[in-house]
Length: 341
Ligand code: HEC
Ligand code: HEC
Image (cartoon, rainbow, N blue to C red):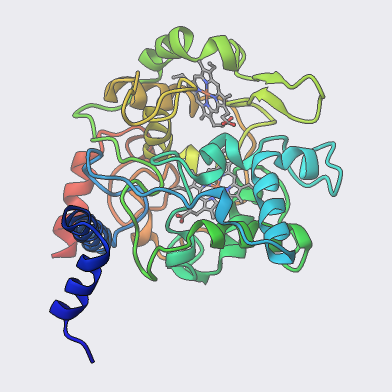
């Protein structure tokens, strides 16, 4: 075997010295960045959306050009299409089945689940199957997808063996390419907006809504249908065609975190428009409007596992439903942390 020196001098004979040094330093830089990403990434093994510092380098979804050719690739592309145009296939006028309310997954999972802090799917392939307190069971990706069909799309579960479910799962798994098992990369899911010292206010939120949301989502919150009529250009935020009271967005922290870095349409984590207060208040306003309800009696079998902003009792503490819905949340969190010790 040749040693490194010999190999280098051989290369040096063929190439100019400067070029070799440039290549070596580039390799060294690339290597340290890769290690940096692995270290930073693996430190973040926390629940989706619980990551505090939005200024860290954020994870990027794989490029669409890396979708393989052939059958598997076709399935992944169909999955991506289903996420973007869910209602076209599965909405009230769906081509394949009529099992959901007209929303698209992408309405809440921006850019087909690839946008940093846009409620993306970065950590789904790497962290499922996993135990979830809401169901008290270990959930597969299919089960989690159906949670959103039954709650966020106020609809019915998709058959787990259907081509549509296999396609959605194939797409989500492809999106997780390169994320090591168990790791939640930076920028995953929904940003956690710091708690206010007061309760979120529906009255103040109504003013935010008028000024910053109504032009698209409309005064009555019903949005605007798309010209083709199968879905929405601007999706509804309440009423019979919206997500139900068992959906993630019905929790104020999820709503506030989603809109902080994604609404009004066009903002992201580098150019948010809403202050933290506005995000909480508009969440309080929208989630005090009427919407479909779901039987939630089987949810949260262990009441101590309820998130602090789950708006329905019974609770393991003595705070009211009102405070669990609107806050202030800090006292609830402090009481919970005390109990843990
Ligand atoms: C009305 C908004 C909304 C719609 C529409 C919606 N979701 Fe969700 N989804 C959420 C919220 C909120 C969460 C929870 C995020 C959190 O708690 O951090 C979530 C979570 C998920 C997760 C788990 C993510 C994780 O990292 O654990 C998957 C998978 C998912 N949704 C798939 C889908 C699919 C597929 C569709 C379309 C059939 C869909 N969702 C439609 C709001 C929505
Ligand atoms: C310029 C138009 C526009 C404005 C203004 C706007 N939105 Fe949206 N909103 C959209 C569009 C478009 C979507 C769907 C996003 C997608 O599919 O990529 C959306 C989606 C949503 C969703 C998730 C889907 C659903 O129907 O539940 C919520 C929640 C939301 N907006 C809240 C707000 C709030 C709160 C404001 C004001 C702070 C706001 N939006 C301002 C255009 C807008």
